[in-house]
Length: 319
Image (cartoon, rainbow, N blue to C red; front, side):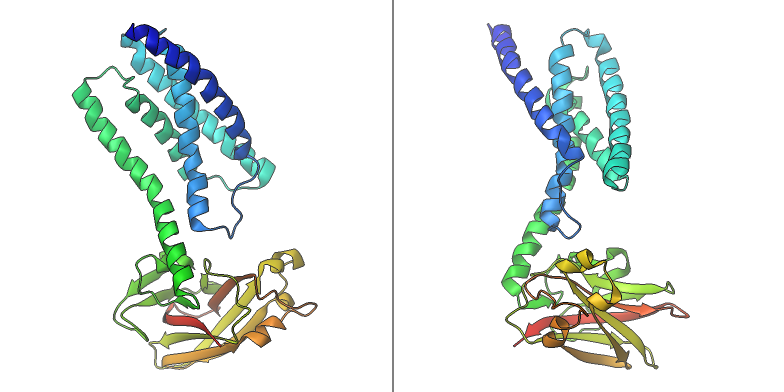
């Protein structure tokens, strides 16, 4: 009776999984989050690779698992694991040619994780229950790591909405992830303008080197000024450049005259800067900036002869 029940469940699940895979496959090539989409949405979309190949592997196991003898289960796993790797590489290359997306090795990792999770959760590997349990714990740990960016994004997105018009003060643990590029950023406590934490920014000798606030509430219409503080630890001044643009900037070719730009003289020690948002609004040469859809704020240096460091803190909008 148990076998009959199991067969009935498989007969129902197989077509359901097959339909879900048909629905999900086009999303490898169409749709998806934009460049400035929220972190949680991007992370959830990436997790779709795990779900899709978990369902794919589960479907194959349901269709072929009973055909293969137990001694051949490892062969089924190895063959399917390899085929998913090949399929994943093919999808990445097609995405690059069709949609211009970059090949993402992490997507390949997520594909393989989905396959491994399916074999472990269905107990389809020819190993003892004890060994399967330990492997399953490891897989669940990897799934937790894959899900973590969604949690991180959701928490900081809610924090950013609650803090607004404060844009960044680095007092909460995930604020650093609002900025690009995280590899050159460090949240620290030694040099701080406000509160207990500030952001250390490593600058290089590249043509343009700096960081940009990437994830933040976009509607700045009710405010008149943007305030932010920058610390220069050196004994000499140098120039720090600032840029602000809205969502329409890309439609206008991202031209230099279609954004707000200003150069600040960064003196030794703390520098408290203030930018008129009316000047930001009128900065584009052929239009008015959409202050309800501000998309990016960046600070950077140009062609430095040596590497430098600056510290950012307390960025907020004022009335």
